[in-house]
Length: 191
Image 1 (cartoon, rainbow, N blue to C red):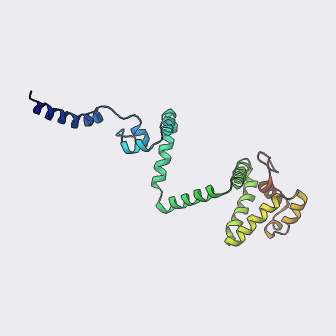
Image 2 (cartoon, rainbow, N blue to C red):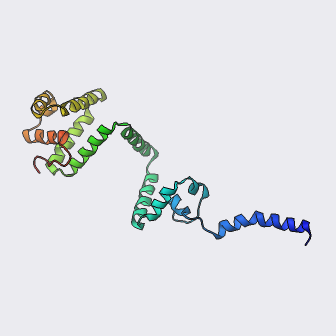
């Protein structure tokens, strides 16, 4: 074999060897990183996924991975305008101060433990809030935040100046006070 032929063979080997490795050796986590069931890796996506995420994905039980895949597919099937509304809501949530996010999470937990009558009162409250013009809704939210800092007796008196609150029955008022001001884990008044 002449040196010239040897160089030619080496050039061919070096050109095809990486491609041969690509075909013969599967890339770890390629299909996982893409969230696709096909198993065909996409190196760009694998390189962009942080190692911790890949490891966390691999450690997940198959049922959880499937649940995430289904959620991803449902997201992709949503109309673009609905996805945009969800992104906007998520952006607004992240911009809230931690104190407000914590308060809202607590309200969600309280509502989960509420009975049907209590939920009906809370739905009535939210319907009322949604019906208000933006400026009035913002002012009402501010008043509720101020009422939170008042002792219960003064709070009750201050809330009586609110027309919506005055129109509620006694048990409904009690439920609304519970929802707006209860500490996490506190039981509903009728529960």
